[in-house]
Amino acid sequence: MKYLHLVWAELFRRKTRTFLTLVSILAAFLLFGLLDGVRTSFSEAGQSANGAKRLQTQSRLSFIQALPMALEPRIARVDGVKAVAHANWFGGAYQDPRNQIFSFAVSPNYLDLFPEIEVDPAQRKAFDATRTGILVGEGLMKRFNWKVGQKVPLQSTIFPNADGSKNWAFDIVGVMKPKDKATGGWYDQMLLMQWKYFDESTPYNRGQAGWYVVEVGDVNQADRVAKAIDALSTNSDHETKTMTESAAAASWMKQMADIGLIVGSIMGAVFFTLLLLTGNTMAQAVRERTSELAVLKTIGFTSRSVLMMVLAESVLLVLIGGVLGVGLSAVLGPIVSAGSGGAINLPPVSAKSWATALGLMAAIGLLVGALPAIRAMRLNIVDALAGR
Image (tube, rainbow, N blue to C red; front, side, top):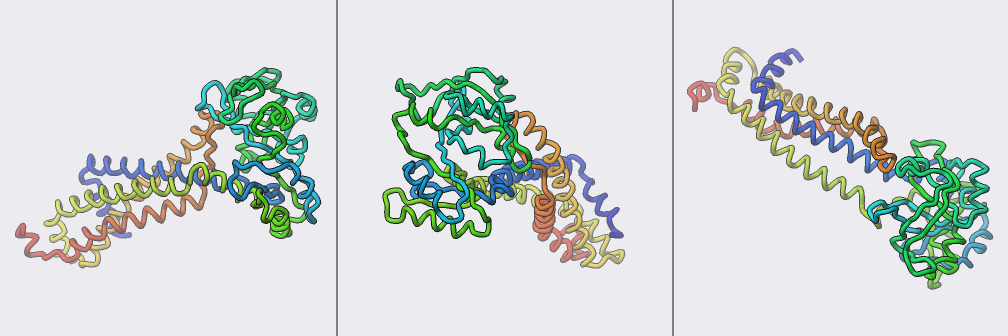
């Protein structure tokens, strides 16, 4: 653009005002980058090549509603089912109820259905042989500075044990590691215990499963298998809902919190405020140089040129702040993930996120610059030079 030097000069005419506006835009797009990472992390839960082979069967009523164990052998006999495992939510916390841990009581064959989780064979054998044994994600081990062989006290936010208290004690016998942290990073923060020990120790379970994990032989037959499994309990008091692993993860998240809605609401409020702030900055900037714009028209600049220059100034302002903000979020994301000990796992800012951010920058820039640009285009030279 041949008038870029003029646009740049006008943009930084009031350096303090421009700097403060850029900081506001930077903060808004920094928040966009980080929150979009949170949304992406939740939406990609369960989406992997191995996950595509797994279905999850839970109660149609709610995922906290237990299912009878008698359902497992019936599921195993469904045509197309390769293997079935069961699990229960434990609701564990360490030392403080706020230190929530993804903790599950699982059947002995549970890990066989998750080849993306690595466990040392000797530690897996110790887990199978130890009644109070637990396998802990590598990130969780680092987070609490735990060691293999250590006895760990946990509180269950849901289930009491045999003596009526919610205080449980477990022995760490092994460490779990995801083969691919990009798609299985949350396994780092997971804890698995023996389902039999859990079932025999709490009076609130007694031979029930929270949900079933089903491995199908052919991914293309997954829909048919899911319908066949749900047909087993039609019109019973424990009707089921079978879905893909990714859909089940999304369902779990939405029952706890609609992450997409929360992120969208926050960003909507942030960008609405940004529109008002940046719009006010541009309107004030154009009002201050009304006579200068009139001079430009006097020496031959067309109304269309003046319109485009003001719009370019507005878009450039948002682009500079926005690119810096998203770039900073790309730098801070891994730092936040590492600093949290793996409790927060923010993925890198993707090309799709960059494209969305750049689109938002252009749209906001054009929107806030539209009224000042139209006003500048319609400026009457005589009135402007006369100060009217």
